[in-house]
Length: 235
Image (cartoon, rainbow, N blue to C red; front, side, top):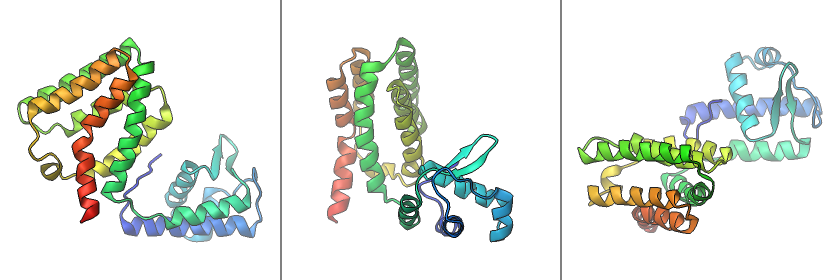
């Protein structure tokens, strides 16, 4: 399922138009929770759009929980009509999130993730985190771009939380952050040794299963980024 927080505005407008047409069709048929929608082919012909556009709109509505695809049965309305209409109104009115909003959400999420990871990690999780840490250290030490290795380090921690929803949210939040990330501004003045130590401290806290220290170390890791967005908000 391809869900993005930063679709190009033209794509977002087109997809929202298809979503509104699906909403209008559901209302015209007065469907109730559990009722089946017309097939993708039927809606494609009715709306005069390609089937993949119908499929993408349905997947987005599935992501938000208002529709549900059933194996061999097609797509059904997952909630009542009143709730469905209210949710659609919110979905199509969503703006593209700003960099600061994405970062605030990710920081809050990762503070909870690292606490759970410290409590729930297995030896296999710890090895995966350590491998990601070593890859990060290898890149940053020689001055190569390390953003992808840093991302894998954080995702390996998310997997150790044993919460698939949090992992999914991490995967959803990270690409748009990386797309708009200005490392030269955010990371200005950072030292290689201090950046490595921050990551190592997080790893060691998870290794010792100390959720309080793990949360403290993650908060320290994000301190400069938090200050950066605070400064931007006051401008």
